[in-house]
Length: 179
Ligand code: HEC
Image (tube, rainbow, N blue to C red; front, top):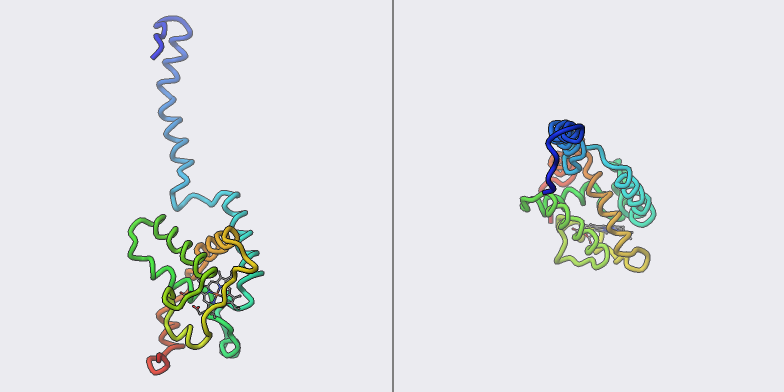
């Protein structure tokens, strides 16, 4: 470290800095702790989520419903609604302790499944494939990068906090319906 003269205004300035700098630095760290779950999402992240939402609407929502389906709508569904899918995907990775690892792997699963659907990889209940058939690959219209945005949007928004999957499962899939 450079020697600092211990007299005159330079010393005074340094003294003030060393006194206040740690406090200021600490406050900075606390206010910018981007890993804290309470921190509002940054505008960049928000923009990415918007892109993901848009792509999801264009490429996935033709088959996957976002909202809870009415009885009528259930009959004409082409694929499981997305809140159901995301419940199963999140359950599939909940054994991973580190939350960021858990999320990374769930996102990677969604990207991979949409590109290379395969019944042996499926995390949904078997009757989903039985009823709807295997998902066709999305490869021709959607790139891996685009799928990453979509997966991020899905992970952050589904299932909504208000959704009780167990209750839904009991109501719509009573045991006799499970083949
Ligand atoms: C042409 C209809 C169709 C489109 C479009 C579609 N899917 Fe699917 N998807 C399905 C069907 C049917 C299933 C249920 C059968 C299965 O799991 O393969 C499914 C299941 C899934 C699953 C659950 C996999 C599992 O079984 O664990 C994921 C994840 C998924 N889709 C993601 C997507 C994403 C992301 C998009 C948009 C990029 C998309 N899908 C677009 C029909 C579609």
